Image 1: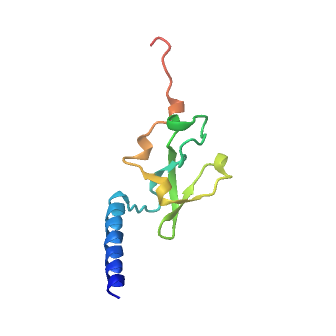
Image 2: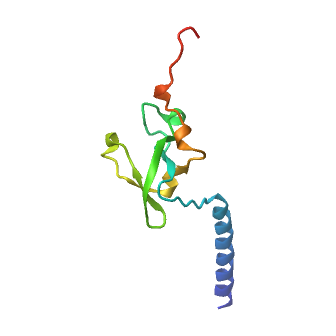
Image 3: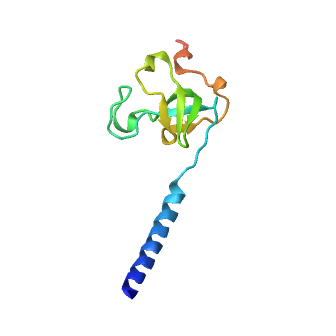
Length: 117
């Protein structure tokens, strides 16, 4: 009985150590409706997304508006019509907060380079 008690105590200390290490890396995010977020498109390395593979592939793409909060960690995004085949609900780990005003961000397609430069 005494050895079982010792084993339980050691398991409890090991679990508390692991929890303290994982809590350091955990990010608790909460978003509100009408917030703007980046969507993570490459959760695994080596997957081909947007014509690039590996470390050159995009991590986050475009800004999307949050329409609705679903549960504790899921959010529904407003996606464009070309992404109609993609499910609109994403986990909070797939989203990144936008710092600043999204209206000031200029899309890359609208930037024109002067030929004389």
